[in-house]
Structure formats: structure tokens, C-alpha cells
Image (cartoon, rainbow, N blue to C red; front, side):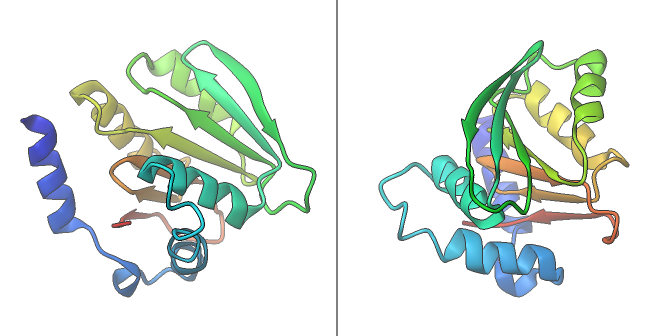
Length: 163
């Protein structure tokens, strides 16, 4: 029941490309997420977002992270815009020490991808703490997943986007 309330709240507060005033996020949304949705129509919404992100940013490496270990999941030899995407499947088991380890490895050529930030109260609290962190300038909430970027050239902004 709580998840339904969260989804309803998200839908009320979220927007599409017309409510985005950041060129970085606008082009990612229109040319990355929305433009490739037909290409990945057989995938789940979460998988479409992940694959569109990998394609749009030409991510070189995907690193899967649990609360206490990292695994290299994918390598892409194409020209890169971002070298790494850190894929976090579940924020449930993260504590302050885990976050500090994770955050220390993320830099401006990395993307932090959070799977299912609305899974539970704990994951939502952890997601909100990451979004509020001064280490990330751009946070994008898709409800089924979230993205965090360090971008020194952009002021801190949080986007709730419908896909």
C-alpha cells in the first residue's frame, strides 16, 4: 500500500521533457531515454532505462556493486563519454561506511545507477540521502531507478521524470 502512495506522489511531482530546464538532462531524456524506447520495447522499464543510459553516454564499464563488493559486469570498447557506470541493485544494506566507500570511487566520468530506490523505507531513505549529498550535482528519479552524476559545471538539481 505504501508503494502505491509513493507512486501516486511521484506521478504528481514528476514531469516530462517539457518541465526540464537543464540541457544536459533534457538531451539525455529526449535523445537517450525517449528516443530509444522503441528499440528496447521488449525490456522492462528499468532495463530500458539502464540500456538507454549505457547507449547514450557510451559507458565503457558497468560495475555491479553490493554493499561490500564490486564486480565488473560489462566492458564496451567504443568511444566513451563516461568511463564507468556503477550499478547498485539494492540500497537496503548500505550504511554510512558503505556509502563512503562507494562515493569515494565515483568521479566526474562516472554514473551511479540505483535500481528500485522505492523498494522499501530503508532504500528510499538511502536514495534521498544520496540525492541530498553535496557530492552529486544532478539526480534523476525515474521511480523504478535513479541516476546520480557529479557535474562541477552544473548547479545542484533533482529531477523526477516520467518514462
